Length: 227
Image (cartoon, rainbow, N blue to C red):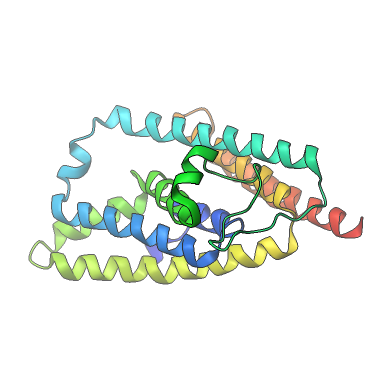
């Protein structure tokens, strides 16, 4: 349980829950966690050894930079339209309108009300690739080779508890902060994680970005509430 805190997947869940329905974010995230956990338990160390060590980090970093740029564009579009307009949600919990989406319109049109679930599944799946939770699960599967089901159930239970808390926190954040501020903060965090994975940003720089994002988003929210 302790090993699941502070990883990229946790941050992704909180961010997504601030923009999509928390229940659907939970379902999508748990789908990704279950899929990864099953692979980790079944294949053990072979899962990571099958991927060249020099490929996994850069690939993850590039994907996060792409997600960051995509989210930044959404935030910029939202600000240009109307900073004080709070987006409505469809019955499926997905924000209506072109801006504020993590999925492009053609994809969202196909998945409909399940957009929040799909976005959570994809982003959390990418975030967990090569993360410490994944490595911990692989190690547990190796340490307890005769109890793969117990390892799987234990890991999924821990992730489920933490993800539920993360989703609730993200949903509460959305009620007090403008969506554009959340999107801008998420974009900065995604890009920072990408640069960190690519080796262009040190750990101290990543921490500084996270602190700056929290301060900036809160300040933006306070300014908007006073306006």
